Length: 255
Length: 255
Image (cartoon, rainbow over all chains, first blue to last red; front, side, top):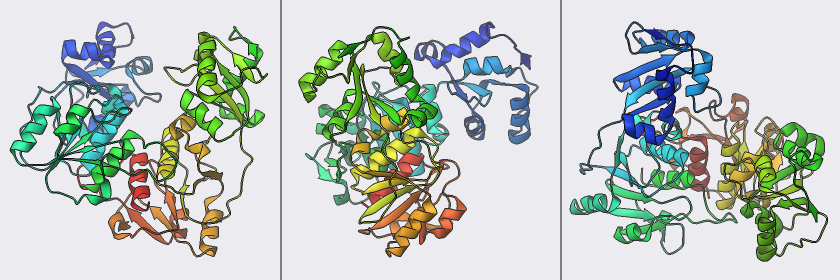
């Protein structure tokens, strides 16, 4: 166990940089925080690079999750360092540094998948992945232009679902081709009435479901590759639904 | 038209304080920002106290929404002041100060209503109100312990729905009594399996639908007053759904 008491410590400075995509790319590492996510990572059997926490938080991790505090991967920090590492207002003073997963190529096996076409809000991406998990979808495939999976806000919004279902970053035309060569339909959610109303679709055992960018929806190129296009009818005066809410309604329709 | 160029100007200092509940309570005023919300307030015919913007933003408001820039309610500000007034990262440099509505008592007329029991996240409350509007519900009733309607984050997440549907703050037991005396059922959404699955409920033309706190759900006291208790089945490994997503799935089920 190491003890660090200065925010200017080199390790701390480097780990704080993991909040930025550039440094995650350079190091192949990312950081998560909070007891729930740390517990989910441990439950999933993930090997961590560091577990950092205040003495109190580490003791809690030991008592509740049987973490061995005697290894060199454990780093005791103080409240000032916790605030420095945290991406939240109210830090729980516990952080885990993990290795970014090796990129996987999508190979269709079975089931239902969400395809995210250039979503830009980290919270939305995380929330949609959490919803796909709750609905027992097999995984989520992100277009490379979508927000980064390892963004701390995305990680927080996933609430552990990052350790439950398959998450793949790949060009969507490739992925849609794979669905089609397995004779599995791909539906695209639209923002406008050029499509069929959601309630006209029956649930399916196997499916690809494309969710589009918050402001612009699914790109034309991708929508044209899809077998069906669907939309949620807006019945009141609101112009649209929140992207994560809309995705939730569609995902649960097919759950 | 007034022109202000210092963030230390007394009016600016006072208006910046409207981001805090305390000052909204003292003054009876609140502040909204961004072109979309300003446009929605104008469309709804709301009389504003001030419209503030950079020269460029005000010209845009004049060109697109026919705002009369010659009145004393118009205040030209600079970018530094816009940043000071803003609650967002990327300010659109346009702000409107409005009077908080007089409190209304709920009197059931017709239709479907969402009842919010002590929600704590301003973004969730705003998003649920936006969803209720999209689903053509008549209004949303907030327990007094819920997050403040005039919080800038709530206002932003409502995306204009605050100008479309009825929003009432009132004790929920009173409100549920009013539903019952009109022979209208009230359903409570639950986080656990002590309830009936959502898909077993048929849509109804008139309904009260209680949504609970993000972490603790609907309080026992309120759940006991309800005619039915329902839940969304979690089919995967996620422990729960995001509160605004769960509310969206339920609201659209009854839309």
